[in-house]
Image (tube, rainbow, N blue to C red; front, side, top):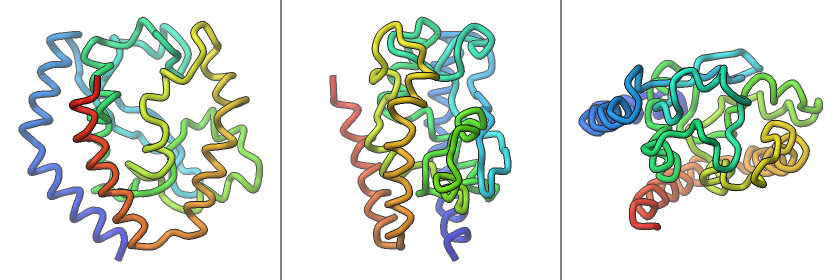
Length: 200
């Protein structure tokens, strides 16, 4: 039932938001010519890898020019990229992943395989469900790059200081997960996105 609800709502969102998709794609191309979409490897259900779609917020070939986790004041981030990250609009292409059954609308934060490799056995319980486009952790995080100390090695700092707290939050979410709680998170996400347009 959850999968049918998620995929149906995601398909409707893709149709309704298609003009916005086009507008964002054009804005990215103007800022940095090239494919406006970015496909990142993430660990999904049972740890199976899939390509998670996002709008590109960094310069072309950014992955080969720096660490996989974006640090504070990372020069690879585009001007339009800062706006897309702050408003979470860069996440919209993940509706495609939901339609394909690779993600849920609400669920644990999807992580890169190199981060999942550091999970303990208990933390790997996160992989018993599909990752979500949004969730409590995603809402609490905001633009994560701003939370890294300037000059810090983003990957190491994330694993040492941030990963455990996020996983604990997601595990707590799973222990009390139900349709009503997910609806609250979806509503909070929509509110967050709308408010982010007026925040400085």
